[in-house]
Image (tube, rainbow, N blue to C red; front, side, top):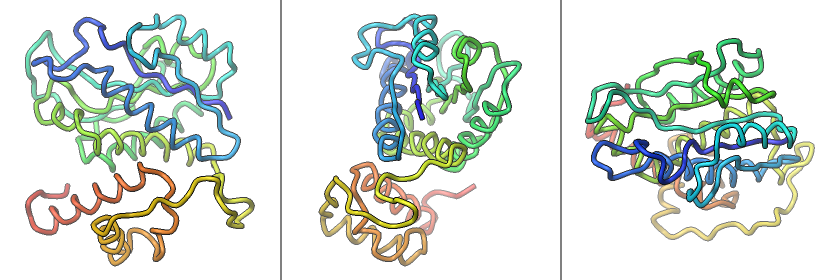
Length: 257
């Protein structure tokens, strides 16, 4: 299984930033692909490559990005973006949307729908739907390809979210879980349903982190003994984020949609 993760644009691409210049789109895009790559590599028979320059110094031309995906024989392309609206300045356009080509394959639609429903669930933002457009990355890739827009840089509230590590993690989780569903990927530490000793050590949690796991166990969100199956720092961050979110909802500090 060959997966291309594409972080849209480059660090210095003109105009691709928040109106106040506090975040460049590439900072969000590249971090999400970095997190997603680490997660996907925990699955059997999965290879992941970037089509962008990981340093951000070069905005790889779109033609070279799809050329790389086609030459490598990728099975799927996911091009990650943050959205924008207007000619400059802040705007109230909001939400997440996921694009496929104007004449998409059935598999592209499956992947887009799987990722998009999880983006909506993970972020809690407005559902703008799965849409069609003739964007280069979904037009010129010879394999199923999707382009999620993970929130508006031109919306003050969403720009604030796009800058945070928990939000970037949530978007990466949505992408990974969507691909896992469509391609029925299996975790490396599971072979035909039999647990084997992983090559990566279980992470030793701090007391506050253990308390967060216990909280989620009591809520029925994770199974008992989950702390003994944490092998990745992203799992720790997700636990903390979920715990904080649930407590804020229960206290009335924020309202769940």
